[in-house]
Image (tube, rainbow, N blue to C red; front, side, top):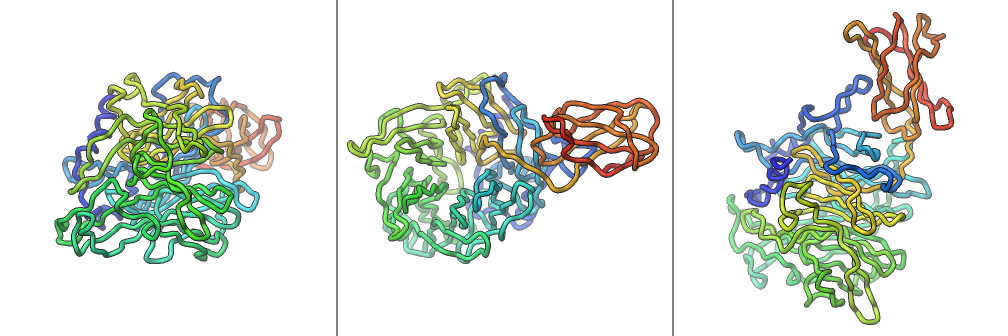
Length: 527
């Protein structure tokens, strides 16, 4: 475990290169190994990573629901022997886990892309899953990307949303509002950066927010940070020198990473590299107020314990604000990470509009040394992360560039901590009550081992399965039940006695009703 954490922290000392990944590396961004991943007899094409708990889970105190995550490789890590990007443990894809960290649904994506930011949302009154799917450079810049949406039956909804050139949709946010989806977008803008300490022939890596019609893919609205926020607010500085190939090094002055629609004609947007969140009026695009970890930029006086830096996932809950406080790190010339300003944590503040103050409410983390093998003060997330406030008072923290996600009680007790295998990460982690009902039938498989017959059953994405019935016999149209078993993880297996030619598996819900039956299968084949 200690070696695992040190590998991830080593990213802070790596030179990741401003030029990004080569085309060969980008083509294999989702390359993976099955070592350390699941393999299922009844679902041979699925290989999600095995995620384990570091702390003893306090199951009785966990909030009800499943964890929604999506794995991708830590792109700052490289193979020492070849210099190539490391391979994922398991396939990349949106992944739903139960409270025991067992897969419920997994959708592997092609190896030329990766998936990030899986979450449940509502589209036209119906629950849907959304995620970003695309390619990234080794400094996290999206080179292509689209927002995918599926319904509770895992059918695609509307069009995959791709940004209108020259913008590219980033992996950071896709927020559905009515019939539309709001996304974070980036573009390159040539400009003179000398007054900011950069080159005369410089390039700004601009940030924006766009609204698209989910049904048609039509662009409806664009808000450009450059039109409303001066690059001088950035806590990074442009390079006055060109890159290794002589081309300008783009300056990521803003780095937009979250959007929240308030329902009052405004939206809240977080900019990592200005250490600020901005409430924006949609009609004119003007900033109504700024909450910042930089005192000179903030409309609110922030309590000392509430100061933050390089934040992600800023969300309003009435007059309460939640965010993930990375407190790390500037990306310096040459792609190196700067020094952290403190340990990473989930943070909750309370705004007082009358006095213009932001008081400290609570923090969650940093993770203890018993989990990470490091002093808490040295536990840093260099990028990504989220903080989710749950209805029962619990809090979920996704640790971004650190391979963990956690659930805390409202008082700060660590209830569950999960870790990813090297080199996998998840941008965010959400706990939500997803109810999936696949339209495809359950899957079954039969195999022989040491003279015994083993039957396996699974149903990718079905959330209502309580137990399995196993049917076997000589006539595929008349198969009696030979065994039953409570669901135990993604795939549930049972050993049956006797010699049979044909088999089926049936999924049963908590009320005892059969909700799905596989087709008949025989021999060593699978359904």
